Length: 333
Ligand code: SF4
Image: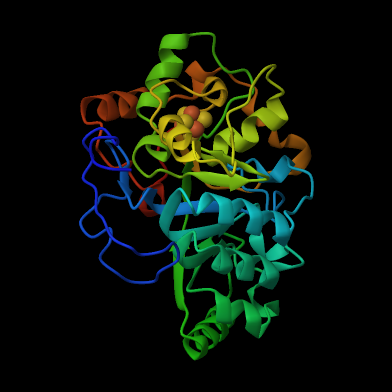
């Protein structure tokens, strides 16, 4: 896609192929928002592409935005992942593929999954994002294929010191970057009752950093989603007619359709039951599966952090306050 066809985006030219590790074919092009997506060599560029490989989890975090605590146990076959990403790689390239779930280490064919991602050429690097509880069981093939392991540390469910030391030694041996990220607070992520206020839905969508700034584009089962929430919310809310995913198809028109889909100003169906980036802050906790959905039996209006919504409306490029670094004491509410 040339500059004119891409609506004035800065574009680069060159003969590089998807999957090239280093190179300057996209040098200087933006990979995150806000603003239009960059396109180079016919491929849409982003920082990261989320690849969901398992829908369930071995934790029950109260505000899991992926709704994993109530998702049935399901994994995506390596062949499906390879097909989806190989086709997508003709139109899209990310600096890193972020391998996620649910809990990705629950996938029984994880090494084959990582191999499929690598073979697709959709990204330069592979980052696995995990709670780390199964890290000690991972075979050498896992460590050989990952470039980075990000371990999410939750109070009461985090790796012990000796497990961290073991993981650090293994990571160093295999040349893998190991990062630990501590989470103490979350924002409300979704609401069972939603809202009938279309203006509020639009405000939540427009301030949504996942869709419009971080670009948490997500691949699951043959579809690409603007955000993980739109992949999961409809599956448990059962909203009639909802269909927020774009089928990944091997066609010359796909890149144009994908760009239009990613830059659409219209809220998604899932936004009517989502808090986007403006849910109220609360302290992290685990919740039993049976009670997990019950606690979200609220209307959107009850769960919005209105002050934060107004801040993001005033300054659309503002980074969302990272709740993992909020200090004690616990905020009210
Ligand atoms: S469903 Fe809508 S509000 Fe929620 S993360 Fe996706 S784009 Fe944002």
